[in-house]
Length: 532
Image (tube, rainbow, N blue to C red; front, top):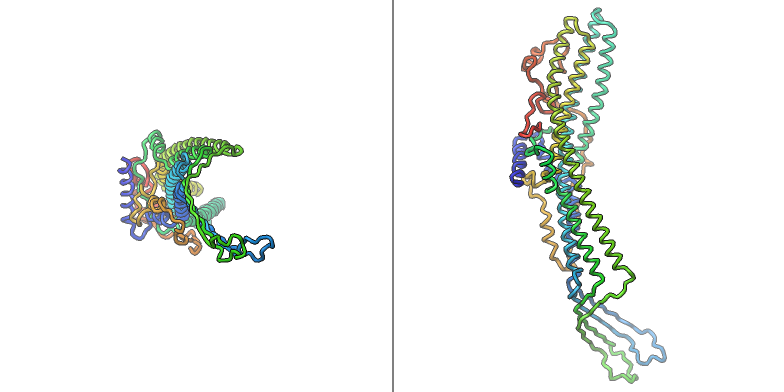
């Protein structure tokens, strides 16, 4: 069932990417971040470093050998030292092989292997967190572009209102108060537009930080498939598949092996040993010496077994055992803390997702009602039953509901994706991102190094993998012409016929206008109700 869900998620993103054209899709942003974000590339390097702990631990159970040599020149002999040669060469070689270590080596290797598994789970968690950041950055840009476009339309509409108010004041149809109200509302709208533009610039810069390239024309994201129907299902799935919880459990298991290693330090060790020595006096052994018959060079060989039996070590082994047990207790508590965090994260994300759905539904009703209200107030103003202030308030209410709607759609999508991430279903393999190239395989490096026993191996000199963004031009708040970003109702001057200004506009009361690349009235949803 899990593989079916993963395939479905990948297929949805693949369909979204297939029709992207020149626009950038969420799938493309995820692939770019997966390939070039320094957080994920650094996490992969850290995991490769953890892989090396396995051959390091195994080395304690393999033979070790060393050679020592020396050359001595007696510059001046003491008068009573008639036996010393003028110079000599000495060499020693030894080989030791641990036979019995009472589990110290075995448990060290198991601890290292378990920590590698924990590192792989942490890498999966890093992927999920990165993808959640990408989705949030992607949706932030879409939302803020729509908000800027809406505020721009509002400023233009208020400018038209202000000019109309001034013209009517000149002919005595309005009072100075009406003109002042229009001026104040337009000035306020200018300030709101500047704030919206600043947020858009910040969102675009954050997109560059996360993805590694500027945001182009962003397509609407695909629906999120297979979202849970209730929190119980979501929590149950997360407890089984959340990578950070799995990493904490593996880290806990590794500390149990550490405790066994600490206990082994109090037990004896048996080694097989072999050695050899060689000396050469270089024909400088004195001829007047009574030992002139001694050879000028010779060698010796030894072989046997060595036993190391600790008797008393000043309390160090007991302290190491207690220390390992304390760290094991800490790891156990860390599992509980991580589990609490996962449960809280899942429930919060689910609540945010459900809440955003409800806000979307109510905002769509509010947008439609405010659009009708604005048209009605404008019509009533034309016959003298409504004031300019009534028009200004109606326009502001429509703008506010539109902003609430695009914000709710962003919040719903981000919360839904965060929910999938907490459930362990938002990783590179889950999203089928392999069409951008092979996915990173952490097992490949582990298999490459785990059996290496050479002392002279190394990898190529490290080079930067992540892309820099220092050369990317500073972002602006420019929003290109896109009829999907605004609302035609906000762009109509007062007293005009909507059909005349927008021949393709549906009749009053019918769905019209799109915000944030989604219809404000009929946003498509997935089977679980998530807006696109």
